Length: 250
Image 1: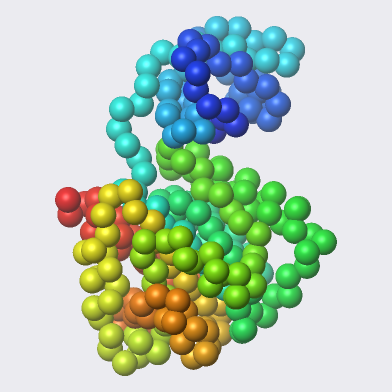
Image 2 (image 1 turned 180 degrees about the vertical axis):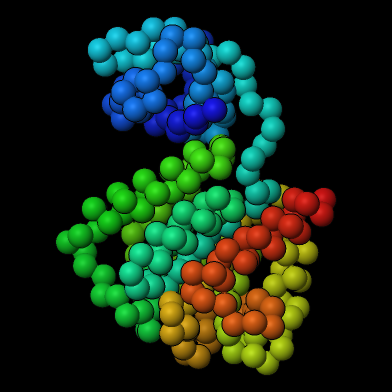
């Protein structure tokens, strides 16, 4: 069943009125008739099944039939901070990490980022990234569509990290040296409703200076197993491990 994220909160209404892109997708792309059903997700992460009552030239009128009872979100809010990678790798990270439960994305400009961020293209780039996140959230039947922040400087990343309950930085040198406990220990300490920021480097990895600065701000440097993972693979590994530990094992 198709799922749509609404740019509105729920106010006890019995009917939803859908216009714009959602209307176009329902009426023109999917060609749903009256009586067809789909999910709508309100901004407060309440999802419901709606049934089409009427379609006009610019509006779909649908009745709320029932509410989704099963929670689909990770019990902790995970923000993925990726050093800007080259090509379309960030798009891949956003899509797959959304499917795996990421709550938010915070790209940053790392010392070894090859890509030079063009602020003139920021609106267009972010629009595409956000669309990828929303479509992935719809596909994976989530109740939250992750927000994708504009890339920030490393110093701003440090400042933003102050608000999180848990902070980790994946560092390949730790993996090479056999460090195996920091990630698992942090997962064991996480409680439902808490937030975590996990930092990953670009293709060339993070510098020792960056990792030292992050640890000054309360980050724990950790390895992610004995193998060295690519910039686009490491966030997916981390989210999979978090899901296993906090969802499947509880």
